[in-house]
Length: 343
Ligand SMILES: *Cc1c(COP(=O)(O)O)cnc(C)c1O
Ligand code: SF4
Image (cartoon, rainbow, N blue to C red; front, side, top):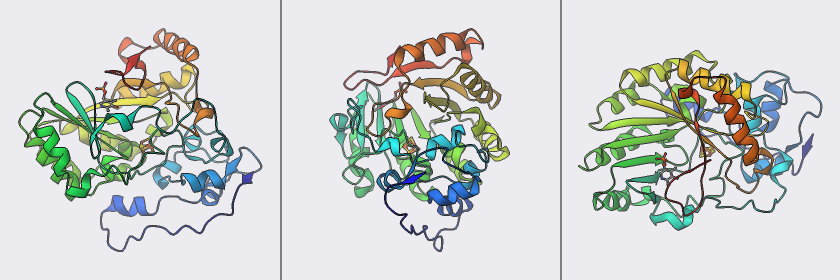
């Protein structure tokens, strides 16, 4: 069922001045709920699709990702991550716009310094997919734009703090930056002596595998510092794509350490078989399970929440089914804490 305002005729990004295969794939991603419904041959009233929710945070899903969804299934775990539902409009007590205290932790434009030894750089507001549960969906990207001065303030901050040994590139998604901008940023970070590791937090290897192309691989392999990539996979079905597998293999072959973090999501991966299959798929792709996050209580995402007690029971049951290295750490992000809080 469709509720809310009439669909806006959303214009697609022009691809006339972009050239890479991945940029064209991103430009042609699905942005219209009706198109998604048609592509997946969804019928009847399987879910309360909301155009108002899509107006507040628009639908975005690359075709490669959509092809991994099961046709005709409103409950497909990949579809659930991107489909705008009327449940998002409902205000729920305790669900706020900045649940993890990012505003407080912002030391300069787009630089979050919460934990010892590492800083997080909000490199862009852009993503290749819009995850309905995203805790940054209300983030004021235009106010926190470190690219405004060509990263100068952010780089100055890092350069003048010798305790910073690791820089996390986040966003949005750092791999939506062009190769020019990404390599410019990475090279300048790598030039800071005390920075030992550059860590990219990205969903693109999963949702837009075209992004892992020769130019990116060459750029990353030339960096003089260790590169870590934390992919954000939530379900084993996300690996059912030869290009995803090939991209991860290529990253591994240039020496990138691959880790995964998952958000525990109602209706997506909130059962032991789904979590076990995800861990199996990760390890088969040489990606180590790292974190399993309790959902951040962001407005509009309450219907994805799995209560803490249930989450703990799921992980305890998972531990009995898979090798220890396949069990991610269950954590919650608590505003003001010096690290993620293990549960
Ligand atoms: C999550 C997070 C990190 C990284 O934490 P790790 O436990 O090292 O993965 C760093 N900075 C910020 C602001 C974060 O939110
Ligand atoms: S890719 Fe990450 S930042 Fe972007 S919408 Fe999804 S969860 Fe949020």
